[in-house]
Length: 522
Ligand SMILES: Cc1cc2nc3c(=O)[nH]c(=O)nc-3n(C[C@H](O)[C@H](O)[C@H](O)COP(=O)(O)OP(=O)(O)OC[C@H]3O[C@@H](n4cnc5c(N)ncnc54)[C@H](O)[C@@H]3O)c2cc1C
Image (cartoon, rainbow, N blue to C red):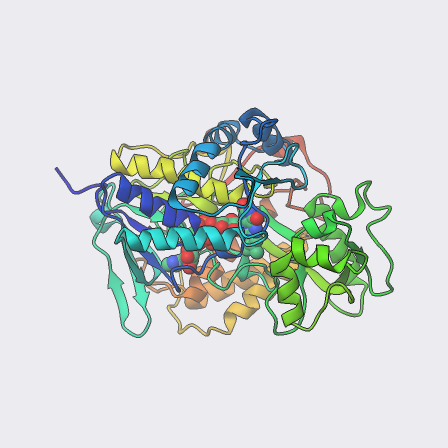
């Protein structure tokens, strides 16, 4: 018997990677984790709001399902949403078993509520430190279980000799050069692409390398045009774009422009509590006519003790950066926040390349449609992570059904030129300004030309060469721009000023793949 499935290589150590590795271990496999920074560094660590599951007495998976489908602007894969919402409570029980200290009152887990959820169903830990708490607990458990973890940046996956089910990862360890992992099943749990955008809530590790790795290996990627922007992150030159949760607006904080005017009133019946994409676009428009790239979130009307008790992490971060939110207005900007698209997978994490799996934010199951329901992403990593771990235990061929439209993209070719890290800042600016909250054919074509030009210089000259981080960033950015250019409508988080409305012809997913591939309907 070949050694298939027994030694999976998990790339990434956020909720999805840590959970898959732990479950693989519990199921008798011998997983290894490689991750490009400290084990705990990830988007997961910064999640504030909570993790969604229908565990309340007045709630049910059916209600959670209905809310997820409603948020997704006509594109949610219903089976994926059914699986997510039905299996979420069992995965929360796993987190409790691992020791995640969810907040309780008199022994009962307390549940918060967020926009577009019809019931209170957000579990949180340490108030607004939910992600930190989950990450630390899973990390400790992983170390206790003795799972091997190495600091490596994966840059490429190859199938030696084209053999099925075996994927080798080439990675770089700082200072020691390239390593080749022995061929074995690979699980990409590499998270999103947020930090490729100039303004982003994501830490610097979120560069979408997993998507580039899968695409180069021949895997289908989909929904790349759907990048969710969060309306409010702290803006100060040199400071991180720390997210200011919308729960603060829920408590009564309001948005003001540089003249002190509440600009959301009259734009939407829910004013500051309008959907994220509506608020983000309104701020974008204000910034275009403003003398500086931010607007203000005014929480000075809230009692100081309530503000600090309800939002300890946010309030302490602001104080540390010289802003007392109970006395001064907070400068805020929208930021790239969550990547809905990614490596196309089935509901067990299998990509279209045998032996290559993807879970969490790096994957695209279709569960979020064109607009993610807040707090569904942490739980997504658990639900589909569990299914991937079980599939790794008893491998069988499978993979996603290709979407109705699949664009064939010629293999990237380049001169193998030396990479200048400074080129990443050009990619970040271009993504933000031209492939951002508001796009059009003109801006998208301009961005695509820039990304392709960077790719031509930096792509490896040989088809099995090792791309650097700039080549991978340019490739991922070009996939976002291509998909956004192709989708000639506005839907969910994708807004085109030249096609400002949804079009029935586009009520379908869009895939991208190397070469020429016929598509089947989904
Ligand atoms: C500020 C903020 C607040 C959020 N709040 C919430 C919330 O309240 N509720 C919710 O559900 N979601 C929230 N989200 C979204 C959620 O946190 C993420 O979608 C989720 O944590 C993704 O988990 P993941 O395991 O897929 O990826 P991540 O947690 O991002 O982990 C990815 C891992 O891959 C590693 N990696 C990346 N590339 C490579 C490479 N090439 N080689 C090796 N390793 C690599 C990274 O270092 C990292 O360890 C928030 C996100 C942010 C940024």
